[in-house]
Length: 592
Image (tube, rainbow, N blue to C red; front, side, top):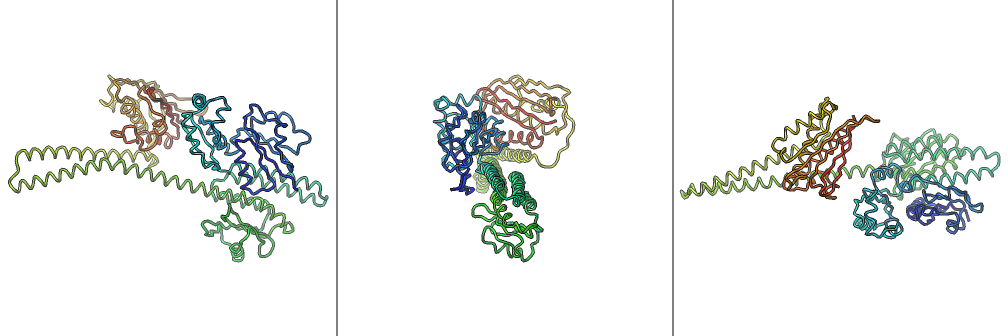
């Protein structure tokens, strides 16, 4: 019975580690769970001992705060070879470091499917009854973020239950098993490399050089696999695979045949004999027609993603060893190709979904005034026919004419009013597309621009009821498009007037702008009003296109335009804070 690698992780990540081991098809690796207490108290060697299988040859312990005691003292002498592998954040086990760190920095409280499956028990272990936990989470978190690996089909419903309890926004990030598998592949490769190294030490002196070369190949392959895992586009992944195979096997020729939807797409013209050999490949590998190289299938699951021919090896005597090494890395190669294709599909799907939302929103917004205008025109047409018939029959009365003229005035007013609204809608749609033709940039003084906007609002800004307080140095000058800033201020102030101060006699708007010279130079702008504020739903969707809290007067494009101008055209950021009854606060930062 061969010894196995035993990977220990806490219960919150055990399902993902186990699924990763199963997905890779390793029969010499076993995943074991220890209690998830997040270091309260940390686990001990004595607590882990009963969990080890009898055939465990090496132990790897993954975790963070729960490993405090393990890192301070070595494993007992009677244990198998043991590695304690701490991570900066436990969630780095299931997701990329960048994704996890950004989610935490944004105020997210991260959870896994296993934690979510027993969220009531988890809250109880933290010392909270479910109805008391909301206040605790609100103190330090802005949202709950589920790193969803897709293993729990009930994750969405459980997340909704937890949201109802703690009253925080939730976000589900599909992460799959890619990060887990990449981490496990590295650990298993390192373990196998260590085993290979120990076997090499027991081999004869004559074979020591070959084993050292194999070790060097594996180490180099491992480093290149890390780079391969970081690729996002299929062409980059294929380039990385070709570089890896060139480095490992030094072939005279290397040919890659891309396969998608059953169609073969060569990257470069293939020799006729090699093309025939690749198309006839039915197994995971085969030798080239001259026996001086090998053919490989690059796949993910049952799908074939590509075929590669490693032709005329520099050292054909070692072709068996080279083939085994190549077979060991094809899984990661296939995973990288599949990830790149999935990313491309997701981007395309997101573009189509966005286009669908835009088209539906435009149709919805234009349909209402268009319908009103058509109805008014139809009424006027019917009244005209009725009056003409009465005139022809010499039965028209003065009251008929008076009624017709009243109807005509009302109908034409409706037609004009709604055609004008459609015109405003079209103008608004054009403004939302801020990535159009380049506009002229020039040095502008922000205070002057703001004063001009206030003057342009005229009677729509009743100064006897609405007080606008501005704190902005007159000499504050920036290089930008003046029209962009006019649009931003008009929409922010207009939003306060139409929505924030709705039903109120008085209100205060406070605008402060300053240049931040520390580090990277920035413009910081804070816009506040003391209006009625926003509900949690309105706050979450305030920058969405076509979302408005006033269906009678709002188009839902103003704040979306502001968001696009600041984030897309100016490369900055905008955040909104608000609660019902406490006004709004927009915080804007822009690079200078």
